[in-house]
Length: 79
Image (cartoon, rainbow, N blue to C red; front, side):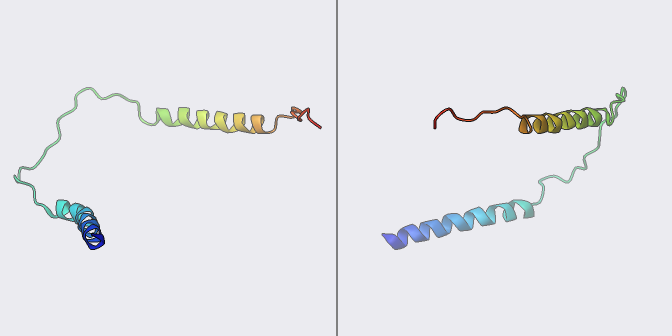
C-alpha cells in the first residue's frame, strides 16, 4: 500500500513537471501570421499616471512616518 502511494505521487510529480515543457514544445496548428489592427484615434495619455502614482506613494510614506512618530502616551493603566 505504501509503495502504491509513493508511485502515484511520483507519477503526479512527473506530470506536473513535464506539462509546461510539453506545452512549450507544441507547434501551432496553423502557420497564419498575425497582424496588428490599424489605430485611428490615439489618446495622448502617456506617462501621466506615473506622476500620480509617485505622489500617492510619497503621501503614503509621509503618512506612515507621521503615524509611526506620533508622540501619544498610550501607557497601560495597570500597575
